[in-house]
Length: 289
Image (cartoon, rainbow, N blue to C red):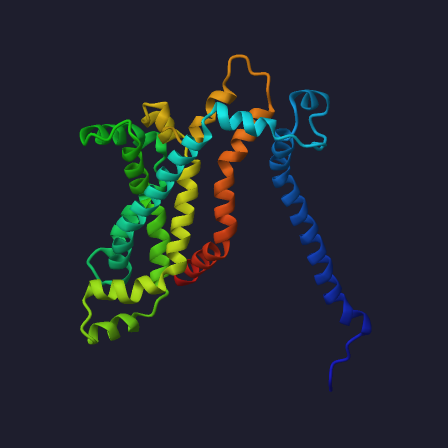
């Protein structure tokens, strides 16, 4: 005999799902607003004059003014700071990928002895804070003549980001069928041939993910740059805006806000443009791992 379902019970579950969806959407919207409020406040501050900030610090900038941006651009020599950051972030990301990509290939795709132990050994680097390694890195850079220079810091960043990149690459490589490697070897490909003809063409999302995330991490990094660079002409933008914030007679709020926003604009644009590649790379790595 079929079970009789009361009319009230038929709609209770869909209604509960709709209520949960509405509650989750409202909660997510509140979190987004709270997260974006500091950015919005900095943006409004950068478009105000000092007098407007003192009179109404939380009101919208009406009418907006670009005076703070012009002053920050000239006072801080922003083209030089942005150029240094570009060299540092792009060079460090490329060195990082060039070093770790073949290592990740052999750990994930080749049955080498102690592959898992080697992988765990590299991952230990994720748990080591910068403060613990900064002095050894400085001494190593000094022993090879790269201490205090921008090229030396590029090399340091390329090496320091290896554990994070290995984690992403290994997870992505694990999701590529091994039958492709075996077919390529039957056709006469060596390990180098498999890497160049099979793995690299399929690793576009992982490469984009590592390059973008390493670029952003290096661009925003502060401690290595402020400690290891001797000359202010080599400072990246993350360090170059510091004198504005630490001025002895600090009376302006719009100038540091404008400088910081200009310094973060390239990474925001890069992430917006490459967001779908980053999401694909991280998702593929998670599934494959």
